[in-house]
Length: 35
Image (cartoon, rainbow, N blue to C red; front, side, top):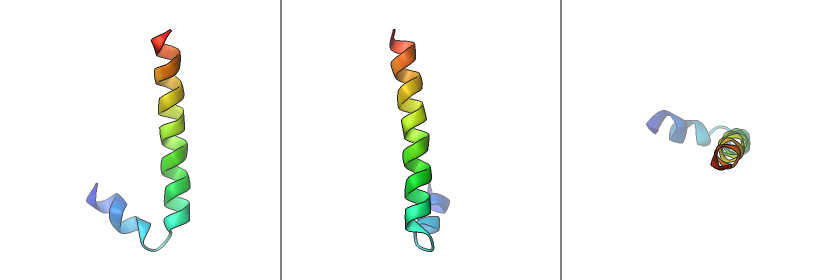
């Protein structure tokens, strides 16, 4: 967690996009598994 927070400072947009993509994939997997 700490390392990810420090990476937000130099490149906030890149980190945000990466995290959003990861959570989108996780959300889709959970959605498919809920069926």
